[in-house]
Length: 164
Image 1 (cartoon, helix red, strand yellow):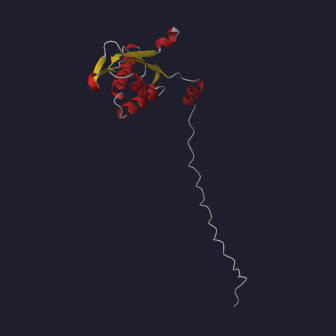
Image 2: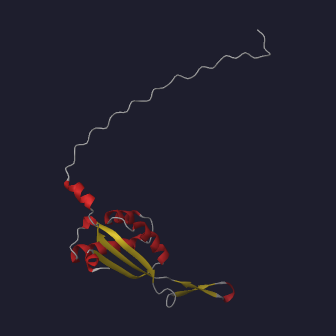
Image 3: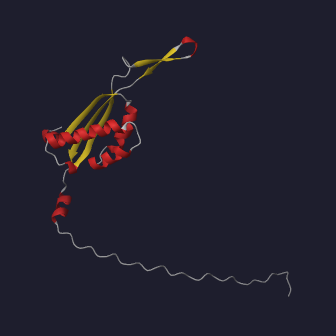
């Protein structure tokens, strides 16, 4: 990355999160690319256990952007979020007793999460729209109700075998 891009970004890291990376990736994929406001609402009301540490991390990244980089909080979005596996096999094994004196290992996985927030780049069209005067909107034209047709009448048919 070039230095101008690095100045417009704020980073927060969460290391050794006591949760599997697959569970955290589900939540990370949901907020990637969204505005910070939308992402925080989504994380607040997500019924997933993995949403809480990512919400705290996102709030930390926003605080870093506001205090260290003088960024506008309203313009921030989640530029990048990565979830990597931590050391999950060496010292985090637990024994699970099995039948006939055997034992299996449970691998208690750890994760490293990185969140990068950045200000949305202002496009030329958006800047032109903001500076242009907004004309008053006309009231929408009322649509006429569709005309109902009368139901078709059945034709009287005489049966070939019936006599009057």
